[in-house]
Image (cartoon, rainbow, N blue to C red; front, side, top):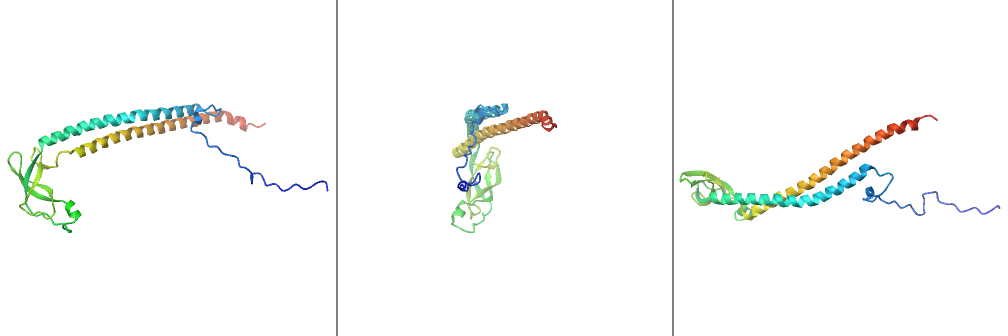
Length: 214
């Protein structure tokens, strides 16, 4: 025999080490690359600028809006405390009884009932306020009355002032973040359309060369 038959080899791609696929780095737009476009550099710079802008602007907006909201609601609370008065009121009729007397739910439940009270001007008035279940007609409760003589709620408490201030501060922070994301999305869309227009223009020049007969 001329020689030994070599052992069978697996077809290409079967067995043996597989090529390692490397994912593109997030900083690929900053590296020198013949395929890197001008718009890629613009996208990278825009992303960095927006991130830095949000990191600086969001806390500042949160502090500014929170401080303004705190001062506003502090003035509102002081005005309400000075203008509202707590007065005794007499129930005109019995309040409904709770289906489960003595339960935790019954202790938290309140029913609106008509009451009679004297306004700041000394004129008798009637209104509705929330009372405990089972309160009987003729019993007395305390109600908050505004300068016009209407039943209203109590002045803003410290916890309410704090929660409303934090709410506005958080909204301001999220508003800056969402604005930055929206700006990034809009700019990315504009650059993407610009790339498509450039590709169409370049293909309009290249296509006739490819389709030309030899």
